[in-house]
Structure formats: structure tokens, C-alpha cells
View 1 (cartoon, rainbow, N blue to C red):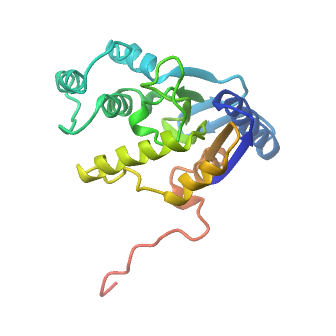
View 2: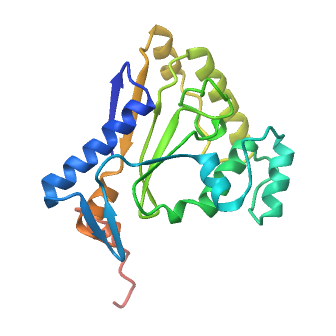
View 3: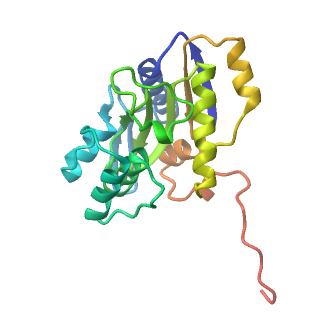
Length: 231
């Protein structure tokens, strides 16, 4: 994983940086932005497709999560579409489950999915037009996430409240919820400029550029299974 941050930038600036960076790497390594991965021909030449998560779900399923709805109503819609949800899941969690079940694996050409729900984006700034969602994106290529980025949340009060909500969700059984990070909140209190942050999965990018089907093929020291007694 490589992480980078740019002051006085937002997630849209980071989108542009990401597509230019990946395309540049492809040209330097392969001499072209056209990549063969398994059965797919992928074109990494910018500008890449940009789709809001809610619009991507609506296109695939017809379900419109732009509509105002309660957590209970969202869970009911999930059950109607055979999407497994826990009773503690909120609207945002349901939206994410729909995306993962119906959309993600079909994103073959490089696509920025943006506007992730607030509930699953505790470090990202809220979208000013619809605070149920955030200024965050993930990059998908050949059905896999290759990058995660957002306009960084730099409000210490909002960040503390997000962490506290994450603790509630953790107590309800969500093992992926964040723990409280007092040091991080204190650092924000000293001040952080508007910032865009990006994380790119190096291993998956190398897999893509080398047409490697398994992450084991690109790790220098992959985990090996234990030899069974008698082998």
C-alpha cells in the first residue's frame, strides 16, 4: 500500500492525480495504457468513468437510495432483494451491501465510484449537498478495488463524534468499526488544512500490469501453507 496526501486538494483533485499516476506507470512499465488481464482488455488512458455509488446501484437494481428513508425502511428493501443485513445495520451499511452484491464485480474498465455513505466512511468529509454521503471514492478495475481516497475530515469535533458512533457499532458486533483514536483527534485540534488523501494497493496494481491471477504471484515473500506431517 502507498499513501499520499495533498494539502488544499479535495477528492476530485485526487481522482485526477490517481488516473494520471496509474496511466503513467503503465506507460513506463508496458509502453502502453492498454492492458490485458485474463479475459479482459483494459484501457487505462484517462479520463476514467466517474459514477456515484447510488446511481450505480440504481442502474443495476432499480433501487433508488437517493430517496429519504429510515434505517428500517432500508433494511426492508434489502430483504426484498435478498441482500443479507443485520438488524443493527444503518441506511449507509445497506447501501454498501447493495453495491458489493450487485455492482462491484462488473466494474471491469477503470471506474471511480464516489459518494460513499457516511456510516462506512468515518475519516471522510461529509458531502455538503447531502450529508448522508461523503466526498470519498474507490477505484475499481476488473471487479477489484485498487484505490481508496477522500477529502480528509479535518474537523476535530465531527471526527470525535464519528469515532464515538463507531464505538457504538463495534459494541453491536461490527468488527470493522474504528476504535477511538485520541491522538488523531488531538492532532486535528492543532489544525489541519483542507486535504485530499489517497491509498493505492501496490500488489493489486502489479497483478494488473503483469496479468497475474493471484496475489501470491507478485509478493516477494508470500505466506506458505504449513507442510502436513508426512509430506
